[in-house]
Amino acid sequence: MSKSYDPRMHSAEHILNQTMVRMFNKGRSFSAHIEKKKSKCDYRFDRNLTPAEIEKIQTSVNDVIRLSLPVTEEFISREEAQRNFNLERLPEDAGDTIRIIRIGDYDACPCSGMHVQSTKEIGEFKIISTGYEDGVLRVRFKLEEE
Image (tube, rainbow, N blue to C red):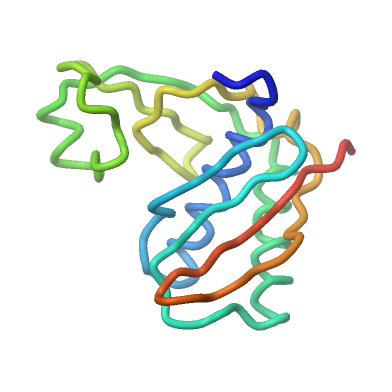
């Protein structure tokens, strides 16, 4: 992992992804770059976001963060994971036991990265900018200490 890796940012990415799924029903990001200072997620989309949508996403993500939800892990068989999750972003050598990260009852996702223990550790989520090109919506975001 890079030295700028931040478990807070990674947990925020999971909340952002679930928020995007719930708001737009277009799936989780297909590509993400998670850094301590700022991060980005790319989504298959048909347009850029409106200012009102950006505000709603930020509010929704911050509302989840403020719930102080537990962030937990569980291990399930690959077979069970394939029935319940999209495994396309897992490394090929992930093995027969898959780690699932749960953020309360808000999100569950296969993941091998480090996370906070509670959403209260994340801080305030802020979208820096968005852009749209060739079917890809890019959302850039940062975290501020609360």
